[in-house]
Amino acid sequence: MTTAHQAPGETRPGGRTARTRRAVLDAVFEELGEDGFATLTMERVAQRSGVHLATLYRRWRSVDKIVCELLTDMSSGVPLPDTGTLPGDLRALAHGIARFYGAARARGLIEAVVAAAARDPQAATALRDFFDERLVLAGAMVVRAVERGELPEDTDPKAVMAALGAPFYYQILIARRPVEPELAESAALAVWAAARAGAYGTRGGGAEDAGAPGRAD
Amino acid sequence: MTTAHQAPGETRPGGRTARTRRAVLDAVFEELGEDGFATLTMERVAQRSGVHLATLYRRWRSVDKIVCELLTDMSSGVPLPDTGTLPGDLRALAHGIARFYGAARARGLIEAVVAAAARDPQAATALRDFFDERLVLAGAMVVRAVERGELPEDTDPKAVMAALGAPFYYQILIARRPVEPELAESAALAVWAAARAGAYGTRGGGAEDAGAPGRAD
Image 1 (cartoon, rainbow over the protein chains, first blue to last red):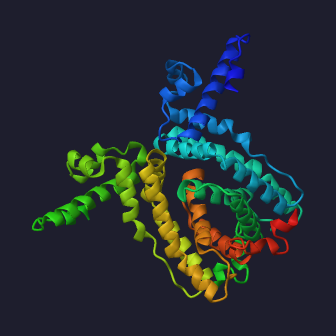
Image 2: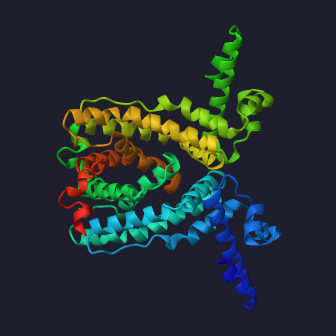
Image 3: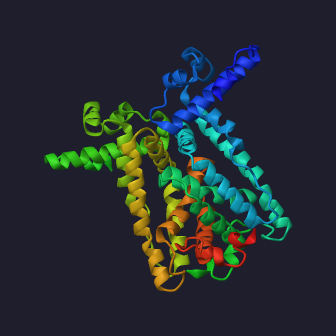
């Protein structure tokens, strides 16, 4: 892919800038898949991408900035389904997330971005804003579900989407194990059952349910 | 607390070693609360703890090693309840987690450990092992619940406990917002509803339920 972008003939400055960016992002993604973030340096990115070290520092300043740009670049990596039912949409999205994070380089990317955010407030803001936007977009499936009467009217779409994603980030960042399709099945079923029980209701309606924690102790 | 440990009179080498460790861990925890991991350096730890920089490097080699040791030291920070019902236990544990991570320094600690794990395989192993152990210990409440007939017999205790913790780590590391008590209510109700629906069953029993994602699309 990098090579294709560097084909001779195209020499417009804009084209060259775009090719440079693509080459750098591809190189970082490949590095994350091979050795992860631990060994990622500007020198290795320069070597793999064929982009001059000075250009990398001038444009990105640090690997932290590059991994954040790569995260945004990957946003289309997980498609948002519309199957006609919320259980179907949750299951399709969960399997999409599982497929994406099934690749070591994708797990390395999110780990790298979180590590960057721990050191760099700009990276932290980029990470938060990226997921905020994703939650709003993905929340459309919850809005449709409420309109279809599948969920309580006070269900918070972003809370449902955060709950669907949470088990994957726990698995990658905390449990530190590969992401298996079984996790997608579990996450989709869990969020569906929890949402129907009112766990993501803005009026805390769930606590009114018989057998809900709110009533049980 | 640090000062108390440094009271004169105690001068046994063992005592001094323990005091040094305590002073360093306390200093790191305070630093994480004030400026987070971004500005945490061995120099700042030495300054705040009153422990010589050479001693810090000889004993821990890096701030990554210190934050991992601090995580283990904090393990008693969240008590494991036994209220007599699983909804009660889930709710009590979720509020315990919310109280612990309600403090900025605790959020800074987990962020620091995850960032350390991204760079240092030993830190990654320490993080994974720490949570594995916590999940097994906390899983006792699920074992009791199955014995009481509150949950399906094939429920995986570690999966339930991971699901209870996941929303907090998502909130801290990905959404990057403070942890509120509402998140504890939502997490406890969600896990209770999901576990009853069979979402954490080792035989995937949940997919058999009417309305489960497995059946809906």
